[in-house]
Every structure is written in C-alpha cells, then in structure tokens.
Amino acid sequence: MTTPLDDLASHFKAIINGLGEDTSREGLQDTPKRAAKAMQFLTRGYQQNLNDLVNNAVFESAMDEMVVVQDIELYSMCEHHMLPFIGKCHIAYLPQGKVLGLSKFARIVDMYARRLQIQENLTRQIAEAVESVTNAKGVAVVIEAQHMCMMMRGVEKQNSRMKTSMMLGQFRKSQATRSEFLNLIGSNR
Image (cartoon, rainbow, N blue to C red; front, side, top):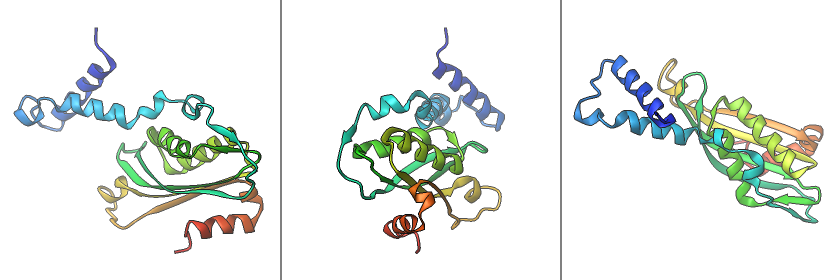
C-alpha cells in the first residue's frame, strides 16, 4: 500500500525523468522523495483550520485603538506556475472587546500562505480570518511580495514587487483610519 508521500515521490520522479534527467544517478536518487516532503511542507496549510490554529487565544480587553502587527514574513507558492512568492504581511485591527494572541497573526498568515495561492486571494483570506475570530470593528491587511514566476521566467523583472491590500469595516469606511494604518506601516515610501 502506497502512502501520499510515495505517490508524490513517484510523480516527482516522472517529472525529473520527463525533463531528461536520470533519477538513478547519485545526486538525484533521493530527490523525488525529498521534493515530495518539501512539497508537503510548503502546502501544509491544507491540513490546518482556523479554529484549531487560534485555539481559543482570543482574550477580553478594553483596548479599542488600532493594533498593528507588521513585517510578518510569508512564503507561498503561485497557483499558476507553482513557483514561490516571498514577502511580508502587515495586519491591523480595531478591537471590539477582544484581542487575538500575538503569535496567532503569524500562524494565520502561514496557514493561508502554505497553500497554492495568488496574492490577491491570500490578502482577502487573512483579513476575513482575523475579522471572523476577533469580531473587530475593522481589519486591514497589506502584503508586499516578490514573485519568482515574474522574476525567474516570463518577463524576468528582478526588482518587481506586488502590493495588495484588503480593508474591512472601519478601514474601508474611514479614510482617516486607513491613512493612519498606512502611515504606521510606512506604506508611503
């Protein structure tokens, strides 16, 4: 009986052979299994869900001013070419009686980033997840990333960077709130 890892490894072996390489040569003998393990790691977000990840780390608080968590590294894979995009995520929210444990922001980013993804959807998923677990008055997310599918192939533009934002609640309704967030993260550089 084969495991999911064995199945993935056999597919990687076929891909490597299809590229014209010899998977029996010394440097490639274990590559299909290593590649399969790496792919499982890079897409581990499929095995996670928001409730288990947050694990009740939402706490009562009188804080009602903006909370910003900035420069959360992210690593994801473009669903179109299965090449990495790498960047950082900035999240803000306006608590409404409850705050989220600090490490949970990074865990939420990782859970959605570790799926085959496009940046636009990733930005929305993170914002909606934070909103749903905190019941915040507003949530803002900005992601800045470099995409290997644009840098390593196609147009090969090495200095390109994509920025996406999602503003929910007060961040969408209030220009002043949105501006405060963007100024805090230094988005106007």
